[in-house]
Image (cartoon, rainbow, N blue to C red):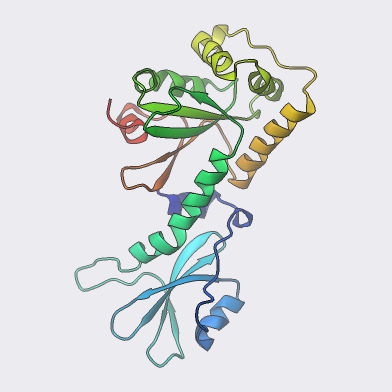
Length: 255
């Protein structure tokens, strides 16, 4: 339940997405009628038996449309062949969900994160992190073998949602002379951390924290850690909360 299509269905605001509509050729009237109801037609794909397939985005969901040979009727839903293979999944992944994933990943890449590990590590994992979050600290501990081996860089997108002093603590980390060391010291200390919340947050740091919070809200995430990673197929996946041991290898790769 962590494929991007489920993530987007459950937790990605439509305002975040800017997929281009199909403009290369005039859309058939029947498809235009669907477009007029709010669907964004983002691509066309091959379909059997004279059908014409169209990939559309509607309220952050991908949907497959099939225009009948007479051009007067549109079927909505997944199409299966005689062997039970889903013929709609691959086109939707390519035309709808892959562009969505690329945009989400780009927004996280451009966010105000603190790196944990080798910047040249072959695998990058993003997580929305609160300094008062025990499960963020648990995931930090779980990831140590991968991070220390130089295989993974964690990128902590700092937010403040758990306690009253969470925003101030995140601000303190973002404002530190060496944010990576400050984060390392804080997480390594666990419950004994001496991290103090900033009482007077400089405007520049406040803007960084506000931008991270806005991104979290746009993704409609409710808790930390919210972990994002690319799987072996290059598809964006999400893990909510500290993962179970059997999921670690999926997120962080082989040891």
